[in-house]
Length: 304
Image (cartoon, rainbow, N blue to C red; front, side, top):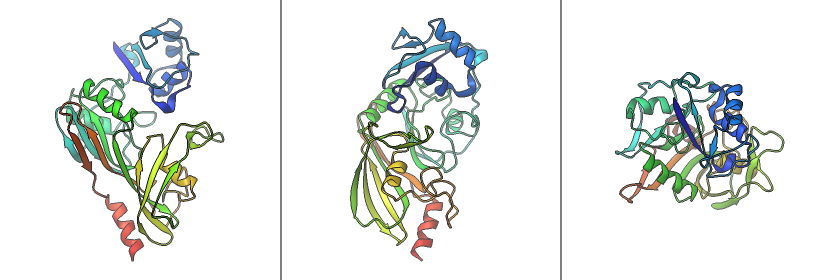
């Protein structure tokens, strides 16, 4: 028997309860099973049973119990980790390009979670359920760089709270298309589900508040190396914001032009700096993920 618990993030706010738990568990739990437990008042929101039509709010705690036979076994894998910081409470890893953060539809193996389970053993927080042990935030598969995981629920709650309050330092490096004339600018534009394609995010009226501070680090004529500091943390925020000002990230196959002469595998985006207040010592910890080789190669070619 497994007790699953999820904390609703801002991007999921407004979803029906049945849709939300279906999205969170993917294909691992059958539709009939989810319908049955909701009908039997076995799905709880903030410890109160709710119907399928309930619209979830950011911060809601959704929980239910699943029999062992209904769960998918996530197997620890001996995958090398580039560890930037680690102690008894948290671990910060420099995620490589192409690695999925946690198991989901089509990606049950070779994820960061599989690697963390091998490295950390049973020392991972369980707040986000069996599919996401230790995971408190994520970055896209083809985005490289810093990601923090938590080894216990106390640390998880502290880091999750800092993320919600937007107090964590999150600075990215990106190579974008076009020549940005301003040395620095702030993009303050709300982000929500695209009205044309619900699988994509977009700048939309009535979307969630989203602010990105952009600083030019180097110009190459047709391309610009920028530093993007997140004031908020919406899904695909930097990718959407840069595309919205006609400077999509190089190689972005969703919000830009996937084909390019550098043959990148997805967007040239790197989570460079991650800073947070340690959940136990209360000290400020800051990590820097070295610029990945593929991005160095592009920069050298642009400078030539």
